[in-house]
Length: 68
Image (cartoon, rainbow, N blue to C red; front, top):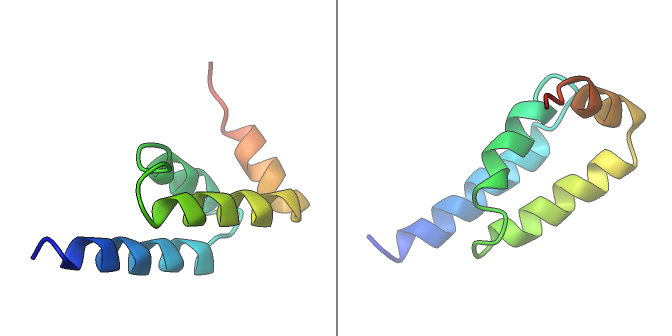
């Protein structure tokens, strides 16, 4: 079962990247924050960053959800 976890994380990460939209971006970034340095999630974190950088609607969505 322990060997299944990395594969499951990779599949989940790929699904997050595929479902990235202005509506889902804040929840996806929030979910990734805690695991952004773990295994295949590192690649997912950078892929999400790259997609956000290239999409004004994603940037706007994330900026509008910032709370201090």
